[in-house]
Length: 284
Image 1 (cartoon, rainbow, N blue to C red):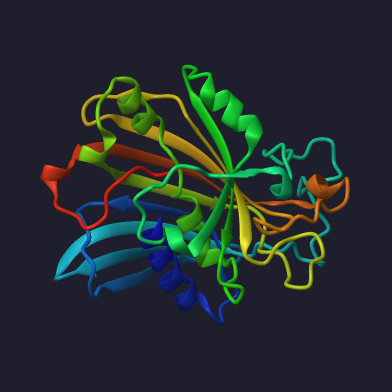
Image 2: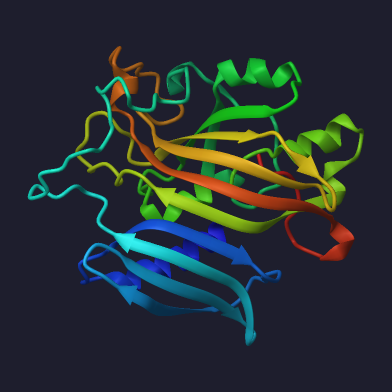
């Protein structure tokens, strides 16, 4: 997710000043392991139309192609000149509901300690509704979390959404635990990462949204050999307040939240011996 965010940032920079500055869809394929160090992102325009721009991007490190990406850019904000307004959003009864059941002020902090280098930068709470479902150990998995950037100066940006969409506990990780296999002797490796952007980041003066928090829902239900190949579906939404803020807000707080992006991932679990890495551990 972090790498996809870096590629997305390069794509967005290449589109500045064009009619299509907003990413609508991005699919990244991870070809080889990346290392901490310098890299380049080579961007190429495949097609520029009146409504959409199609781009490709390749992340290159040490003269090797590590990630290849296809993206579609356009305009996320509906035009006032467009007579057709078919965006489905609250208060429409057909709008997708906010997927978390509990306000951030009523959620308990996550007790697990994932081995993430960036964990000190985040505050994380888990929706108790999904915690109960998770405890039942059913045939699939759903979890809902709130993430808050601890630094008051930090802000949720479009480029940061892939990062938030990559912070989760996978069903494959849970399957290893259930089979009494130490998941810390392996690591997740992403094969494909696809994001579709839905609504723009709220304005900074919005009274209904946090500037540095998001809500994330993740679902998984299949694990297959080889390498515990598994899929994960995720949604990232706006959040009403920051983690730790005890202001419960108004009763209609859910109706003001918007889905920022959805994501489909294909990943696998590989032994650490396959590739020595500095960081290991599950996605939350």
